[in-house]
Amino acid sequence: MFCKKCGKEINDDAVVCVHCGCAVDDKKPASNAQDFNTPKTGMGVILGLFLGLIGLIIGILIYPEGTVARKSFLKAWGITFGVAFAVEFILGIILGVVAAGMSGNMYGLFIGR
Image (cartoon, rainbow, N blue to C red):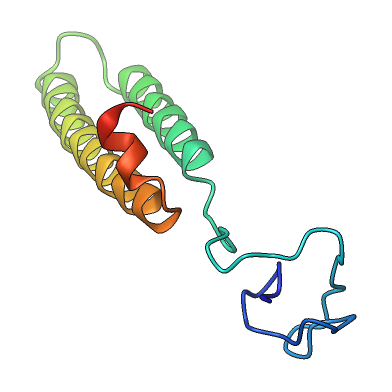
């Protein structure tokens, strides 16, 4: 069987993992296909959007209305935010497909199950 914390193979009769010291639950042996250190990407996306909007608000407050500096700031911010959003979107799709493939649900993803 495999450790539920580190994913390394351990003896079937083990009480604790010899690699990480995690207690082994006899009722539910861990499988090797389990996500062990999945990053919290949803929180990262929300935080990135939030910080981007905070930057926009600060920039609008700093530069006086109708100045060239404010127009340049808004243009640069819009381009940067658009590119960052597009990159995050594409990476999200790629990582989602990879995660689905690693969990063994790739077939169900493409046939709608």
